[in-house]
Length: 57
Image 1 (cartoon, rainbow, N blue to C red):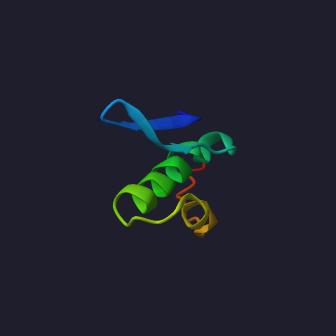
Image 2: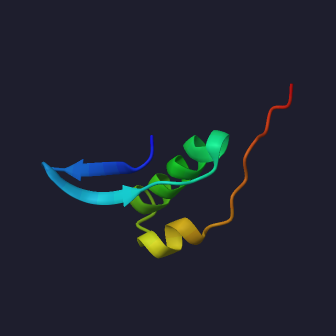
């Protein structure tokens, strides 16, 4: 899951990753959506605030 490399036409076009244990999927997905769907630059994508759901047992 991390690091995550996104390829476009066989060439790397985005790289992201995250520390955080159980929160890695949410953080990586958020940065990818910001970069790919909203055209945020990498610095802006990783600077976004995070909102995650923590399930406690």
